[in-house]
Length: 141
Image (cartoon, rainbow, N blue to C red; front, side):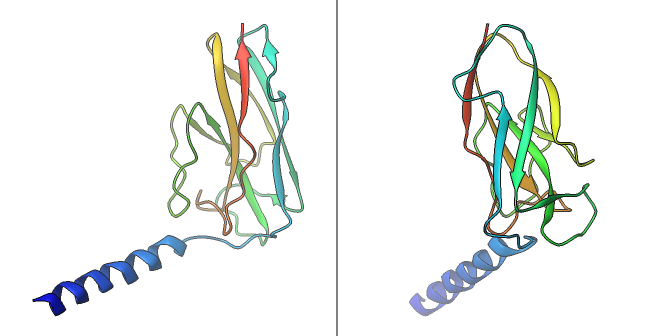
C-alpha cells in the first residue's frame, strides 16, 4: 500500500512539474519592464489616467504573432501577479493589450490603487522567466 501511495505521489509530482513550464516562451534575460507614468506614490487629481508602458531589451508584438523575444503588455490593477504557467486572466483587474499597445487610458475611482505590468507571449502566457514590472501605488483624488 505504501508503495502504491508513493508511486501516485511521484506521478503527481512529475506531472505537476511538467505543467509549470508548459506553454512558456523564452525571452532575453536582460529584458526590463516598467511603468513610465504614473510614478510610484503619484497623487492624481483626475479619475482618467494615461498609463505609459516601458520596456528594454525586448520587442512588442500583437497576441497570436510568434516572433522571438517579443510579447504584449498586460496591466494588472489592484491585484496580485497571476500564475506564471497559464494564460493571464482577462477581467477588470487584468487588462490585455494584445494589439501591441504601449500606453492606455484607464479610469479609476478615488482612493489608493496598485498598478503592475506583466508581459505575455503570443498565447497570453507569461514568458520564461516571467517579465513583470515593480508594483506601484498611486492615489486618485
